[in-house]
Length: 480
Image 1 (cartoon, rainbow, N blue to C red):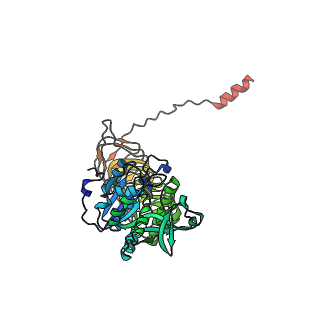
Image 2 (image 1 turned 180 degrees about the vertical axis):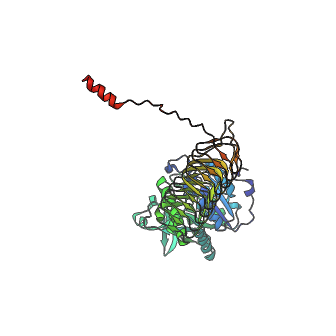
Image 3 (image 1 turned 90 degrees about the vertical axis):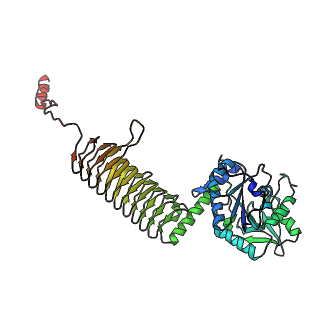
């Protein structure tokens, strides 16, 4: 079901959630130079907006309202399964207008206002802001951070230690530009404060926009309790360019590497691995440089993942060795199996315990039995291979037929398959059978049988005529 924009369900008060998040994600992100909405650009493998939403969920925020604009249909398709409420900012009229689009007058409790392009926010950050806001019994707070290079951030201006204003960098004096405490763009407020004071914000500026920062002056003038909550400089990091996007990914990947190393995973160079946040790796496993591990992958203890391997949504048991330059997608490798180098395992493949899949072997939708071996240069697709089976070099299952359907090959336990064999599915090979090298098997093979299907070898002796070299030499001399 399509999530509503400004749904009627929010025209009345909600069921009094203690905390609500309003996430601003309506901007075009023109500096990204991409047709994709900025908040959907991936940071360490997933849309940066997803990082913000999940941080809110983990921090215990019960109501998440997302303000969308540019590319709203694309954003909706991504966030719909996350259970957020979408609100449309029809025109880009400033940050205060964006917050108003989320209907804060229908909220009871407290609100935290975030930007969808701040992917380095964590649940711990949000919990800290919430706890401090509640402990200090504040009405409105802006999250600030102290930066070595404040650049274009709005500066926090104080008098006698108290917050009095936020000055945008373009409007700041030379003295104000020396301030290193900046506005991160994160606000915490009582919902009633937003309902009362947002409508009073004016657009008396060159851009004719409604700025959320103006709410500070209104609430300070009304003698409300207004202040700052200091955050880690990391929370001020917003993505506006492709360079900043790459920087955010590097930070997230290194955070994940450190987390894993702290738990006992051996990562040879944490600067050169790319492991997504959702990945699980057990202690004692070794990760070599230039490894990519994505999605819901899980890797057991004492595994070795050699350089240039790419793993997507796959499960590896204990003691698995994945040799260099191998590609895994939605597969399962059981304990003590070895794969690669240069192997490609495609979806729905299961490699049994202590099995071996060698170099330049490709499998798709294969159940490969325990202790079976496919050493090199083989394609197996839509197949069920028993245990202790030897698959010779150059073996192919011909699973795709002229009717555009795929058919299954079943090979029983203990079977020996000679090199350069083609199995034309559908067919079944019984246990402990032997397939002669160079065979094209088109019929079922009984257990313990020998199957050979190749042209009969014919030898014709003296087929190539050779000349008598001594006679040829003699003739040449007589001619001289």
